[in-house]
Image (cartoon, rainbow, N blue to C red; front, side):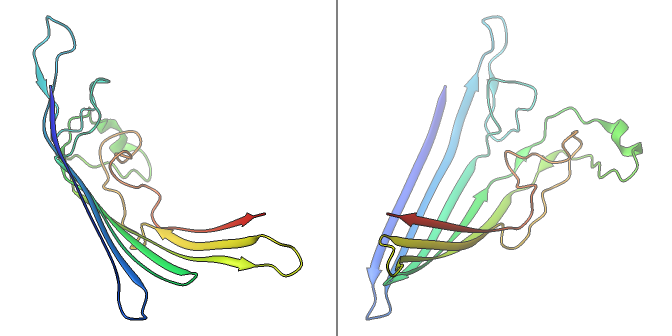
Length: 179
């Protein structure tokens, strides 16, 4: 049995000649997520848990929220996204032998902390190339702009990558040419 609440809010408004400002928030709250592997097994509540020892349920934080703030004026736009993932119970088997490896970052934990990540990008649209036709759009952005480090846990991967970003800050550029 699965019960959840989903919420989405959108707001957009032009302000004077400063451009259009946008706000969007999407959130999900997991109220219940219960499963039973076989008829002989007990019913298990997976909400708020990492669920590392089953293939039936993913990691299920109680809350996931994405908030987007945006601005655009003519061909320019900037968007910021704040991502929030609630904490969960760490229920994986800790590989404590890893603590003896050279350069080990092994940590014994019972909770995976809440995750907050800020992503931002700038886009310039409809740049015309003389004599070529078509138009060019380019973006420059960063994921995990604040360079937040994933929580270290007692797993061979060192972190829970479906909940935390193990890459740190990633800066990227994108070019799109439309004929």
